[in-house]
Image 1 (cartoon, rainbow, N blue to C red):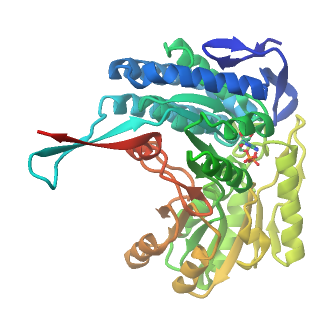
Image 2 (image 1 turned 180 degrees about the horizontal axis):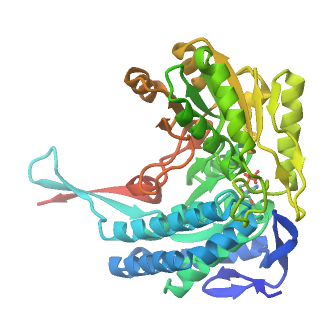
Image 3 (image 1 turned 135 degrees about the horizontal axis):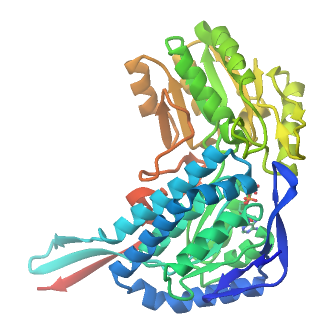
Length: 477
Ligand code: ADP
């Protein structure tokens, strides 16, 4: 098998590689991907630093053309890249193609943003002086991404970084290097000058850590676990570096007595189980008022029976496998914990055998859970959901907010009063009414509060807050 190499200073390099394995079929090896060393990372950072002065002053039409060309190629190849994504991550082909389309939309959006860069001109408090406020790129941006969105998350970090004139050292997650390699290849061929975007694949403890330790990285944008996020924060403070973190969630979905039952069930099934529950915006806590509780559980378990778990590329599959053996163990450990804590295993909980060897797990529902149980407080990151029964809306809202996290929160209700109150009082970065907690647009802010996020929002024009630094210039007229 040919090795997919790292891109450093405009050259494809690296000879030793690691296999990328399909979680739907562990006999299917997708490819071999080079593993960078700490020294490779240093060279990549040096290349990005050297490329920064010219790229930060490059013309907006050059940036626009490269980002637009990238968007167009990603979209034209959505079937092929969606298949690659589903093979390496295990989400269904429909979800894979959807994610690839979203990556193209993101590049297209930031291609457009290059043509809308603007500042402000403001009169000074002192007569005869003008004040200009402009945004400048930061410098070298380190990008560290997780495995659950192998193309959308790299896209929503790389596109704005380049749009605003930064150079990049990009480290994708070990489990899903394929889509990252593909978008770096597309950007490289679209005409990025050498050193502007560098790809360093490999383990977080080596490649990621070398980025954290470098004084030449001006900003790090990270999506991943809370534990690694804390390391990124500590190292970044030491280097006086800007950082942006997207971490876990334990997203609640409140279901009120007046909810439309089918809307509530569909939103819960989608946000709890689709993408195998491996979305940081998945709802893993269903907080249900007592008037609808039993009806809702009956309808949701009925809906769960129709969910087909299988090979990600099979058309009849609704939920693919868990991403790898380590995540599968985490999911099944939490299922055991839930049972020991006294929650009732109402559906699922078993590993499944399919035609191909893979990490298949039934969607799993716990009822009679409390909000204090570990299964209701800790992020599981699998298709495992707990249902908590409450008396009324006030108790539901208090419980929805009683969590260390604050990424996304949902409510199913037909009451304008409760919907409006929930939007105002939910302590989450994103609030959904009669919609799944997962599933967001590409052009509006994404991010959370409390332990879920740190720093400014990603996506849309709000991305400028992280990827640029503000300058205030005074001129005597
Ligand atoms: P998960 O448990 O979901 O894999 P991680 O936080 O471990 O979450 O991984 C998210 C990203 O962070 C991955 O690209 C991973 O390689 C990277 N990473 C892991 N450890 C470190 C580290 N010490 N320094 C920098 N990056 C790391």
